[in-house]
Length: 164
Image (cartoon, rainbow, N blue to C red; front, side, top):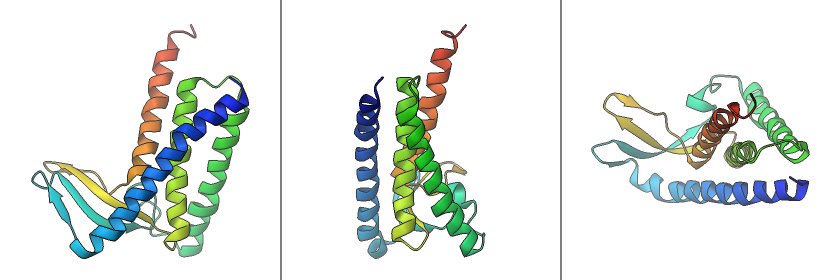
């Protein structure tokens, strides 16, 4: 696949994801401070504004601010750049890998934008529960990253038989 086709796929996947992420976060910022917590389906879905200074499940939130900002701004920014370079330069990248990488890039970029805009924190606002089990609060960018991981794993499983 040519670099232009890879760039087209990245843009067609990433730009709408980043846009949806930022629009949903703006809606949460606009609606939720006044209403507090919204609960649906017997609290199976909770919508509440949370500023997360850490990463997945608030990992790294207790780091000192210079370390936290360095890791989440510089480190993640560098990782996103590396992902983009990989996706554009790898001639043997499969479509499933390119889709997964585009979703990783979109989710990471959406959360990185938050860190720049909201004093190093990410806007999270949805939590899903099933009985005593529940997710942490998350956002659309986190869904993109998780979907990217699932697409990557599915691509690996589908292509495993072809490599033998």
